[in-house]
Length: 369
Ligand code: PMP
Image (cartoon, rainbow, N blue to C red; front, side, top):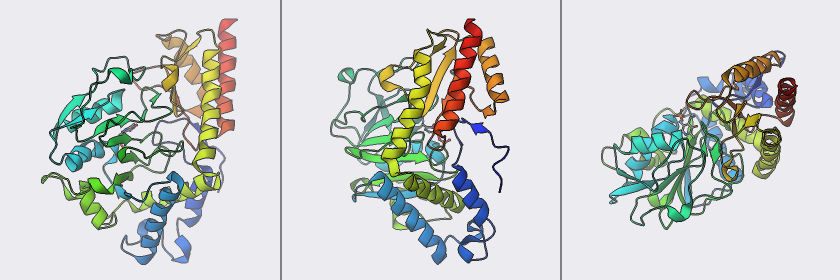
């Protein structure tokens, strides 16, 4: 039951879980609630698992303040599965869907959707991804089945803040995989809000999908049953065997979020953590460089280069090595972007962020002498 030897884990996902959650899992691994079995050994149709499942749904509803006209579903297939499930379920009689492409993940979502619906991009995406282009210039259509956006681009560190895009009277679809419950969420204008659990809410394998009730039942005939919102809702997410261990893990994480004061408190801490790192970047005289438009900087994935806008790979390698020597891991940026990415998900503490901040200051000092 020791936490000794644990690293400071800035991974982009799967990512760090709160120690309290891991210890609870360890404690309950052999004998859950006095039942003499582990949760992952129990029938998903048992009364006891049903209690856990419903409690998990209620906790999401309570913490995120999910309105009554939304259903909460547990699915599989990850965020990527939803890239297909969205057009499969929402096409209805519409001819096309509108996509806002601000980074790698919304780009992938649009590409996958093209198999099932005509995709129109509201602006021509331009690389490198560093901002959300001016909304005034977007071209959309009130006839679209939905308007899709990625609330936080994990690879590029671009987050829609402080509000979602203008919907123009079509349901918004939000991929919140990497900022799920990182801040209070406003469901206004949304039709579907989805994300994998493996960053802020638990383990890989569970995909949480929150769907507005009036959008259910528009699925295409070819929709696989496991991807059908209608089928899943009719069966309270028990159409087939759900990821029981994943639901259990998320249940514990949600209780942990609640114990920390809920989403507002979590958000304030996330602002503090990311503010600390962005502050160092901004005060580094260009030694650290974050390319993302300040209005859209992610509070979850802080991406930066070292030694100038294009980065100095030798310096970056040295920085990563020094970080590893100081117990910090998984700070390497995504291969398509390079540089450094510090993922500061909910479970990362302020103290852990301070260790990174101290190393950044020390590293800069050593190289500007
Ligand atoms: N959307 C975003 C924003 C992501 O960060 C990821 C995964 N990193 C995905 C979708 C894809 O999720 P999955 O790997 O669960 O399919």
